[in-house]
Image 1 (tube, rainbow, N blue to C red):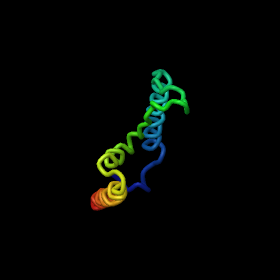
Image 2 (image 1 turned 90 degrees about the vertical axis):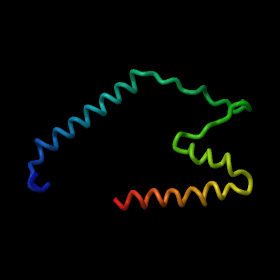
Image 3 (image 1 turned 30 degrees about the vertical axis):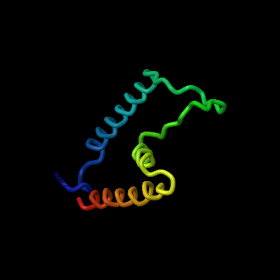
Image 4 (image 1 turned 90 degrees about the horizontal axis):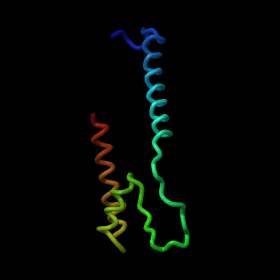
Length: 94
């Protein structure tokens, strides 16, 4: 394969751009066609509703179940930050 700067732009790049545009259009059409049920409207007077965190905070929510009270700092900072640093370090070593 020739270096990037010596390839012609339109044939190879245009096909990729069209594929991305078509896949985005298909995803948009699927999002419009499939009606996903949402939660009920927020009611500030309802004391029974327990809000749940989004999926990307579930690991932190689980840690807070194990570390309560004065140990919240352990669960949120002392475990979370080294784990993130190790994951970032492993990713950057590639």
